Image 1: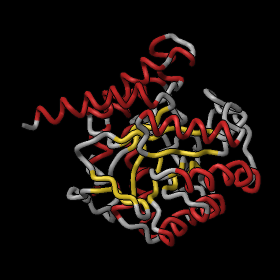
Image 2 (image 1 turned 60 degrees about the vertical axis):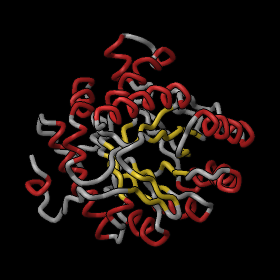
Image 3 (image 1 turned 180 degrees about the vertical axis):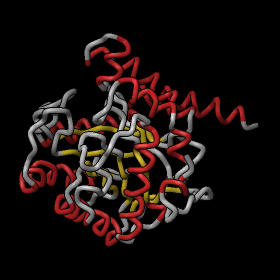
Length: 293
């Protein structure tokens, strides 16, 4: 299915050369970027409660940068299945001290993992350069306005958890592409520039293991929408189901998925294990470069 068949208003931007996030510029096509996960939550599935203390959060952020992170993604609300939603005020309370600290100490861009426009506005005021929305601007379209007004990068994720937003057809790749095309329309209507939009197929969100695997294999089709793609497979349930391993043993599987995603054209991988992932995708980047010589 072509993008024009999903939403004729989407103009495929095949000549995009970079992703912009405020003053930060990411050239595309030569390097797979690493987004390091920093959860300021008590209940995230892998590292809940570990970095709620400001000093521990800052130390871990600097360790990820040293290990090769190109972006840090700070989240104040867990998105795991069954997690307890938090208020906008509580989410801001959790992340703001960390964002202020990191934006003053780190040269790499900071991303805020939120779907709420109020949280996003507070985050960019505190120095965040990227807004990472797990609902793809579908729950709170005002988030596009926030991104537009400050020039932030906006990551739009496909999320199959809500049946009111996704009428699953049995073809998860078509569902994701259609959903993301609408997310792009909302972002563009809100004034977000094409070079400030990135797409995320939402691996594991409201889908089976087989559907997650099909979305990874379908990265080239997500890319055909004309925007860079981020993939976030880190330690997720589909890896555990595929390999029959608990969460603490999912790093090798994560490295396999990140390497395959990079080979298929993904521009960014979002992970907990930064050093190991950075080495894996650097090898992929080297192989791709050699194949182009």
